[in-house]
Length: 221
Image (cartoon, rainbow, N blue to C red):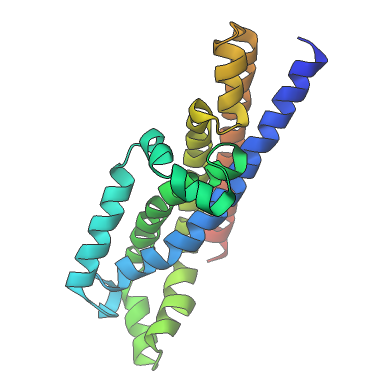
């Protein structure tokens, strides 16, 4: 392969990392408070923090709808929003918008599940000591659920790597775009193979780092 191809591979890898980093950041910003709301408004919430069955059902339905939406269709549906926010509907920056929206409900469910796994006795102890609802959430539930949240974040990043590869089908840039345009359409199986290998290596690296951080936090508890 020529040096030009290697430059394209490097550029595509940086584009994928950019998409994944910012979409992870924005999906956590959107999904974390939504997940907290899902947890504390649930009738089965830990310690009965603030059960609101109607609100919980509405939020749950919204999350379920967004999670079940095929990502490739979601990108197309969100073209106008990407154009409004970024100024264009294609390219690396524009793809961050649908990636963030696609991952946010996934993050919300992971946060909800992690918080519900916290020992109710810990919540009851905090309430007995006079802790407010916000103190229970931010000083008890979130710290106790942190190892599980890290594992969930790792899974989110891995999913976003896969989503970013699919975004290449509609001009999203990154390794998926490289594999499609330079590998498949130009009959370069070597380029496609390298793009796939880089994606696999990224997934393995993220999983390794996530497992190490989660295990370290569990050991310190």
